[in-house]
Length: 78
Image 1 (cartoon, rainbow, N blue to C red):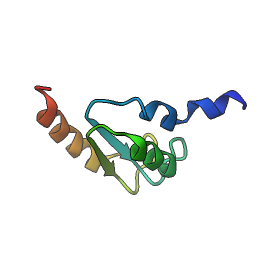
Image 2: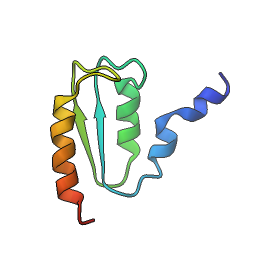
Image 3: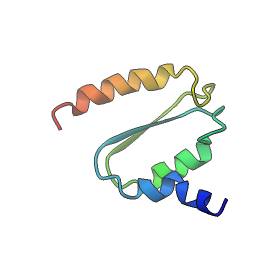
Image 4: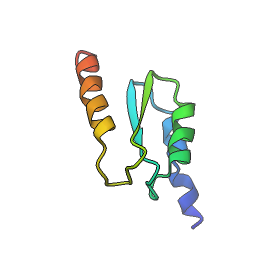
């Protein structure tokens, strides 16, 4: 349990320097939305958040999937 505190996404998010698309679902009990939003808020790079309210960790994410395709198209030459 002492080591678990180092595996918070916020510790890695501060180091992101490229455009990033992040998704979350409000039913995700593995990566809870509050932690995802906290990580998102510390990113200084261009960023985009996509929410699929009814999705869990491994659930269907139609909003994210659409945003992902658009994100790749937008950044394919970067």
